Length: 452
Length: 165
Image (cartoon, rainbow over all chains, first blue to last red; front, side, top):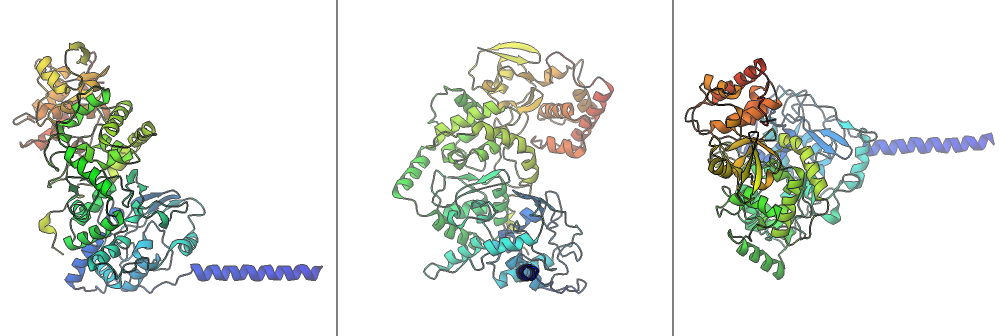
């Protein structure tokens, strides 16, 4: 008996040790030797310039720069269902940034989500996309970041609950969800389409917001680009389920992504404002490639959908309004119509609201956000502007207005949880106004676009 | 006909519910402090206080004002008896052409009712939506600080019946 239990114990011990060894082998990553940060590396200015453009395509500053803070010094709390993860300092400061990282370590972080010391990084850093970035582009990004001003800014402690505060968990997550080479060129498509696909699935990481996530926080490949919720905003479906009243095409997308506004679609708001701000500073060819690929993801509209879109554009003219009869119609006439039926083209006039994706969307959150917060003007830029109505309308009045807008300007059924969404939008309003698009988050000064 | 409460008084107003408040104040009630600048809620010169909050009266239809208290600059003080915010703007000579100043004073008043001692940064952020093409911006900031001190030494906010609360 004693002998038997000894055997079982032995087997158990072997299993445990073996299991631990397997787990170790899966989870353990070696440190990569630090470089001497004093020995300043020199980079070709053209490489640094390309790195700057790529960093803009990657929207790096959106997470790695806090509003009013130093560029790329990190410290932004990224909320997740598991707690807050704070973005890291990616300036070349040797102690608190990546100043002691060789290029190899940077590439490994991008590709495998491991820092120089060998620790697993949380997938709030979207290496599930960045794994697709080419060696050349990683080199350019590295050159750009290593030539920024170093900022001493120690990392902030993540606020994650157990077991998510154990970085070992991330190794398991990667086993399940990190797939290398999710971008594969399609030789049957044009070079521009392929370049766009490479950017969208890699550095631009569009799916990080626009694809819904599963219970473990990974994007659901089966619902690619079907829309997601992020930072109190709804990222619209940008595939065949797009709620845009007028179907998108490559040229409209290209204009919108680079200028931040399109006359048939309106203006980018919320986290997307930062994206278009960044894209305004990259070559038009990159943006057009993204637009070309995404137009394919949206899919060519059916003849029916196309006709509907044309009808919407044709009807989107001022003066077609019915006589105000309901309370919502009266609020609209007094508060909204002076801009939205002004026939001034954007950015100085608002789009006709039958063109508004927010009003046709499945979820009223973005519309509630916009009505409450408005659209702030951007210093020194031609930019859209809309006043905040948080002070002049209470939640009930906003609900009345939104119901009216939905019934008059969309073909969709009434929203079901409108009141709750408005209350929630007002509750979080201050937070997102402070965190979202800052004054420099708009189409950049074109004169600056070609500077390194 | 609807009842509009302005500066503590009830007014019977004969206007469509989608009429912007600004038009009623100026055209029907003869209260001309709030100015028509852009008519689009983009310049701030029409700002008044509604239930304690600064509101752009050119994009606020009457339909939104049922039962609410409207305060205009006239409701804060008069030439003979200026309110602290008005005194402060005069003492700092914070107006040049003055067109935007009534709106600025109203938003500053709403800020001071919420924050007794605002910082420079808070004042600048709060007055961000107000356009001014003259050159008195620094004086305006100083005037808001002065008003904060005046309110502290006098009684806090205006005490008139039905005024901004």
